[in-house]
Length: 314
Image (tube, rainbow, N blue to C red; front, side, top):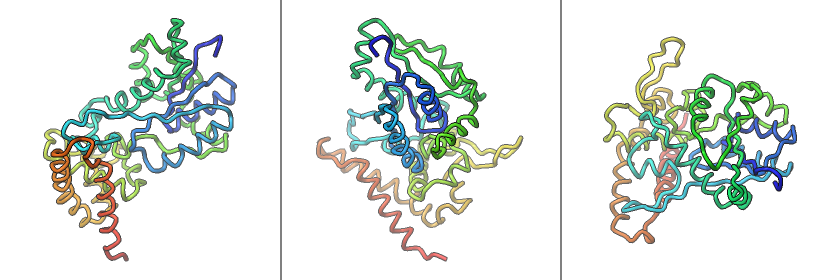
């Protein structure tokens, strides 16, 4: 890096950014660091893919790091980590449900920027008046074209953004094919398992614990919801080829029999109240003595697992 700015790739552990890294490695282009921002709520299949691909990168001399947003000011709340615990703490849903997009900025971009600010090659680059090259995996599809058009209007004195997949004109299908040619499994679409943008077929692939958290999250937020039914906002009727679905993923889980109705009813009836009681107890303690939201969620999963094991199976 003595004669050029350092190059960082933002890796989401999904198809596009993975294919971008695979192709850059094949072409021998500079790639000094790959950063993955862990929100603590990726799908279980994504978490299984992450160590596999990091090992693939390490074999080719590509450095990678996992970064996380670290909350610090918990006020009267139990300490929380990750976006799911944040949503449950505040009795709300991800901002995308309400038409916003701050999840990515707070939980992905910000921790990557914080890590880079301490990285010596970046500091030297900025001291010299140059900009770090940041690679973004937007493909040439219509959806990513919209994201790209929004991004190119955002100037940053620290970064020069580059979009290799768009330079190459690659679609998502070409990205999938490139990953397969490298002998790697094609990863699932990267997103939080409770994202408001998740598709019905993706919900069908979720694990029992992930489904339980979705039911809990919607039940916890329901008293505060006014204009949306749940994580999917409003029902889709199925016109113009769209897949019919309710506005609440909990109702979809119920309709498809992904969890037993009695288990769904038990979670919605008891878990939000139990969480409120837990928060009230912790609020009376100094922050350093409070039990974490993660510990409460562990207890929640143990309870739902016991409920699942106790019901009769056909």
